[in-house]
Amino acid sequence: MGSSASMKLSYAILIAMLMAAPHAEAAISCGVVSSKLIGCIGYLMGGRGPSRGCCGGIRSLQRLARTPGARRLACRCLTTASRGIRGLNFRKAATLPRRCGVRIPYAISPHTNCNAVH
Image 1 (cartoon, one colour):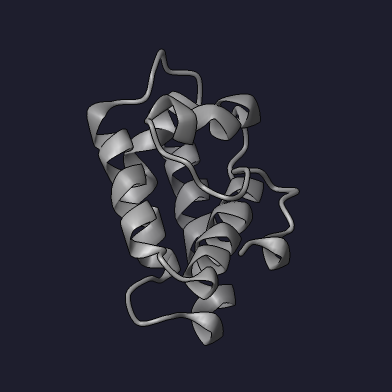
Image 2: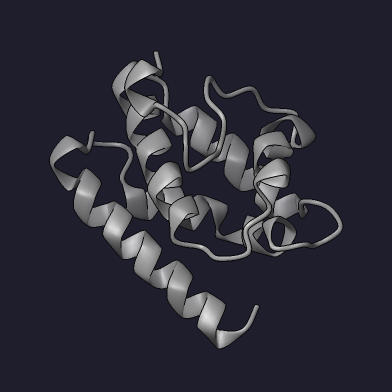
């Protein structure tokens, strides 16, 4: 990933953290979401398959987001971050949880309605 893509990802993460801070639950924040999924960026930008670290991060995030509020917060973080990353393959993002053997109640997409997540 080039420095331009890294900088855009950093800005998107910062914006997501600022937007979600008032809604944060104790165990999860946009910073935590980002740290768990940073290993997935290569795959989502065109790489061959999700790495073991990426899938481990997805599983860890699923364990942290146990309540509806935590799931909505994680969804908002991912949705906001996905809007800020140019070149992200949304088809790969939508299938990422399944490819890692994880079920989450929303799609990783800039168009997901996180308010509907239970």
